Image (tube, rainbow, N blue to C red; front, side, top):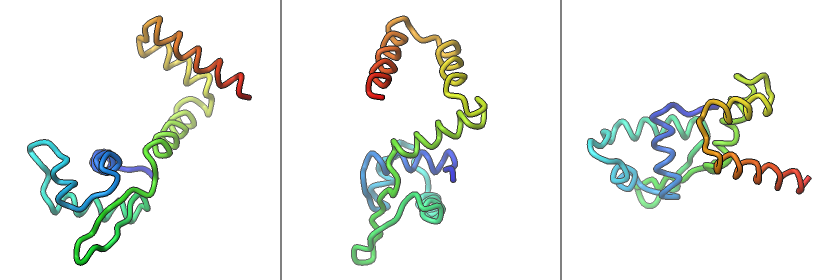
Length: 121
């Protein structure tokens, strides 16, 4: 399951905070801040999708992520590779390196990362 853009933005705030009550989440936004009702709706949808949960502290809900940012991003990238690149990491890497205008240094860094992963296998 995927998050909407608004849900993803809120999730990024929650990942950064690690946990937070409504006030914490609202304060993490820049002006103009979204309405409390908007945040409450997004939190409910994100909970229904099993991305977050909460603990009750008195009558206050303290929200926390159920999925790490790394795991979410990994699933997102794998879905992108499957959908747009025929499930081929090579096609994705080819597109990524040709279409993103990476510098020579950035390409060399990527090459070093790939070589390191090859050695591990």
